[in-house]
Image (cartoon, rainbow, N blue to C red; front, side):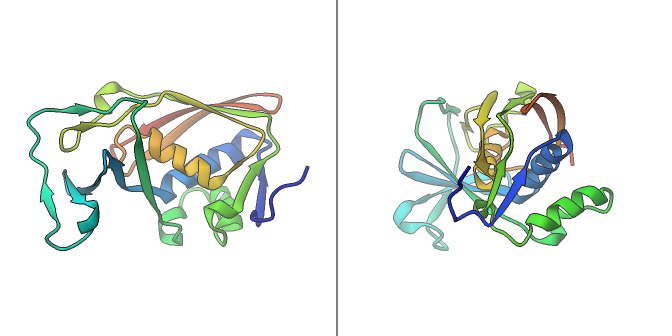
Length: 198
């Protein structure tokens, strides 16, 4: 099996612990910076969303606070583009409690997420176990809530990161993640629950 040379590290997902470490790492690293909806860019500012006209983006006075008169429910099929920031610092990703997780992370820490390939599985099916009350609307927006997604054969760590950013209910908030993983041969069923009370 040949992989594109852009990958500098390959992780073979062969058991549930590796999958758990991947989920934990990606959840710590990936954070939503902004999203683009109907040609407006929205950022989080404390507990409000601010929107920048694209030509005024990030100018000091180029934004206004949202004061919505109604909630906008964004449909799954509407075009929403999510833009992420990645914090791969040791301070952010390493833990004092789980030395095996730290050992795993140190293998991939030198590489950008796009340079790490997960392989060695037939499929990974993620299921998002969520409480609908967690779907907080910021500034009059309720972004889509996704329930499940499946990956076949191989995937970059960056793609997993984008999925996790998109599938969080409270997309701006830091959270812990709990997983329940079942295997059937080389197929992984991963039940994911985001805990926002951290």
